[in-house]
Length: 229
Image (cartoon, rainbow, N blue to C red):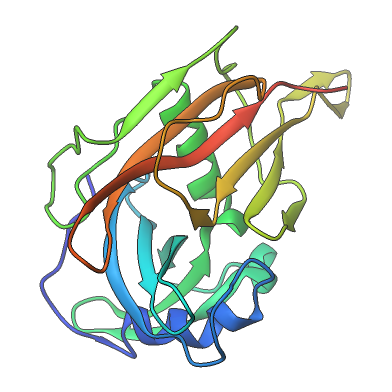
């Protein structure tokens, strides 16, 4: 179970995200984002070592407010395989220095999101320890989400999403062979409304956030496409 510490971080999460956002192709604001925390949820790391948060931030620096999904992991040491995903480091008032990553590059977040899609774990409240978040909606569609998927493989940013390849690894003799590849899509630019139809998703996550005017929004956060050879 993730423990939410009531303490300080320096620099803070929004400060780190504001410095990192303009480098992403899906960011639509100015070089100086004006961010506010707007919602999200957490997942638990089964090993209890890595913090996992799906944070929504709204940016009001452009012509119209935009809500972004920023999945993050918090680690007590650098993750060698995720240099390209480092958002920054921060001094945590209880845990000391934390390395904060864009979670699409971190296998712990990717595998726990796959577990959520497969119904093997439950979304947790963003701000309360040990409290499930019943507002996070998980849908299984078609054949559903297969078990045993791992990732990330390749991570590709588009103009409004991040695409992560995932797949099983089948052991055949002494050499591990890759199995069918699926694409895990994380919506970066959030839009309220129902999930699209006919996109071939095996499973999807929908959740809520707050608009700058205080109204509640709800829409797709992530989905897993069918596997391909």
